Structure formats: structure tokens, C-alpha cells
Figure (spheres, rainbow, N blue to C red):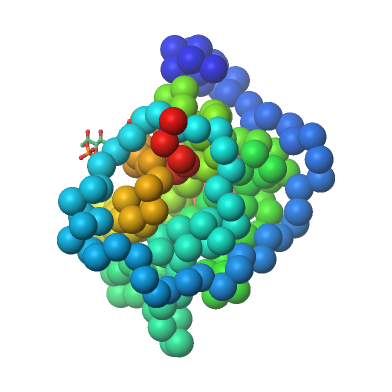
Length: 213
Ligand SMILES: Cc1cc2nc3c(=O)[nH]c(=O)nc-3n(C[C@H](O)[C@H](O)[C@H](O)COP(=O)(O)O)c2cc1C
């Protein structure tokens, strides 16, 4: 669907998820992540960039596992994460839109939990490539976890945390020859409806990942 069509439909609240053909798995257990090797950090930083052309090919599960662990996985036994959060509120949830359904990443279990049995990639942004790239991430702040953060700072602090996660995804992508782009041009209400979010959950940003075209 073109950006223009989507924008027009979005104005009418008409961008709808695509039903999936088969039964979506209620959870997807991710294989253990390989935390060794990879190119040196300075080489990865030298390659980091945004891309807006994606092949349709699915990411294999081990790559998806590494990507999500790098994004916001647990990296310490006491539950520390790969990205910081103010007062360690860990308020960001990473939602994962796949052709087979939409999932929430459970970092402690390192698995994906089904939240919507439909293909809602096209709902995750106005740009046309989001419909066909194999993976769109959505970063959502859960305000119920930020009770110790001053009310006026919650959205900005959560956005900083989401930005750190996004950069982790950029670096993992650069290190694994994947294409990615962070996106703020999104219909937050449409995404919230499609994911079944509560009023305490705030959609911040989306990010597309896939193989370069
Ligand atoms: C907060 C934020 C929002 C962005 N939103 C979009 C977006 O909606 N669509 C898009 O194509 N790129 C988006 N970008 C990516 C920027 O356009 C991109 O980072 C910039 O052009 C610099 O290019 P580079 O990332 O390759 O260095 C966004 C970047 C940031 C930091």
C-alpha cells in the first residue's frame, strides 16, 4: 500500500491489520543467543546507517533471537538489560510484528508472546516498505512502571530508553548486514488499537528490520 493511500485511510481510521492464513503460535521460544564474536564495535559504528529498501525474506530464528537480545535482552543475572532506563524502570516493551502475528518480547523468558493473531506490519507506519519487510518492531512505554519517575518526565525518559534500544538494533543490524530504520512517522492510535494496548501504554516509535533489497 502506498504512503499516500495509507495516510488517507489512516485519517479515517481505516488502516486494518491483514488476517493471517494459518494459526499463529501463542508463543515462540527463541534459541539461546550467541554472545561471542561479531565484528569490532568501531567497524560496526562505521557501517551504521538507515535503509528504506528491504527484501521480503524472513529472518531465521537464530538471527531474530540475537536481534531481540541485542535490542533489549537480559544481560545480567539480576535482570539488567542491554539498554538503560531511568531508575531502572524497564518501562519499554518491544512488540514484534511478523507476517504470522504480533508478539511481545519477554526478555526474562527470551520468548515471544502472541498479542494479535494478524499481520499488522502495515499498521506500523505510513511508509510503504513497512508492509513487506519481514519485521517491524514497535517500542511502547508502560507508564505503570514509571511511578518513581516525575510525571512530567515520563515520556521523554521513555523516549530516551527507546532510542537506546533502537541504536542497539542499528548496531546489531550493521554487524549482521541487515537493513534497518527507526520511524516516528506512525499512526500511534492505529498501532495501539491493533496491539490492544491500554491507556497506560504509549506507542513511541517503530523500527523496520530486514535483509537489504
Ligand atoms: C526520532 C527519529 C525519528 C525518525 N523517523 C523516521 C521516519 O519516520 N521515517 C524514516 O524513514 N526515517 C526516520 N528516521 C531516520 C532518519 O531519517 C535518519 O536517521 C536520518 O536521515 C539520518 O540518516 P542515517 O540514520 O542513515 O544516519 C528517524 C530518526 C529519528 C532519530
